[in-house]
Length: 253
Ligand code: GLY
Image 1 (cartoon, rainbow, N blue to C red):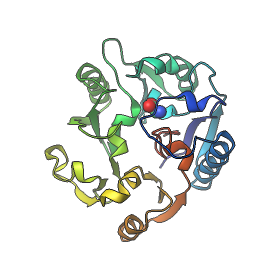
Image 2 (tube, rainbow, N blue to C red; image 1 turned 180 degrees about the vertical axis):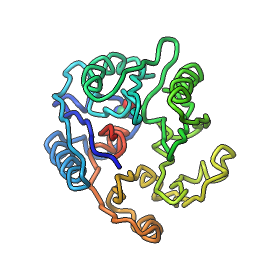
Image 3 (cartoon, helix red, strand yellow; image 1 turned 180 degrees about the horizontal axis):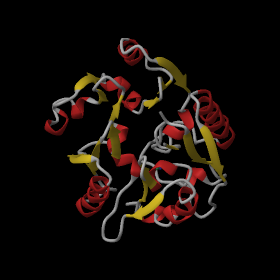
């Protein structure tokens, strides 16, 4: 059971953050804040206590807190984010997590973004992406092993982060985009494979007995309903414009 979440308010300059998404309308700060607030209220309604941090003006992507740390029951591993403009965000997260866990760190030349790290029970899948390199994955794996976890790497050939395309939705089942449907590293799991038009719904977040999914993906919702969890749809239009989603905006533990 998760009991805690850490999040950070978006800053007014959030639209200067990294994105590959071309949107018809520019991102709207007030709408993002409204959606972010609803997200936090939803996490609270799922039983989580929220630690809400202030924006970091020098880091427009800093509200994507998940990339800065991987937290297990025993340890908080502070990452070394893979994007140049995001290096340094992790130094603001370390003292916050030190209040909850023993701290370990990913060291140069290893890079890891938390968005590439998916926990499934005692096992961690670590995506190798443009943000997470082999050295970083190996460091993270060694730390995870030292506290009793297993891990494996997965090549991320598509999408920004591994969790842009693959998430765990309970009952040994992964929600995956078509790119990951036949991925050998994921062969031991049942899979729900998303229609291309609903690929963004891969960024669905299991929080205790609740599945938080982005609004507007009716086919995916139907498939998820079979799993029997409470499904909560959340509007993510503004964060999507910045290549973000539901998993990125908090660290849960
Ligand atoms: N805008 C999210 C990221 O690229 O890290």
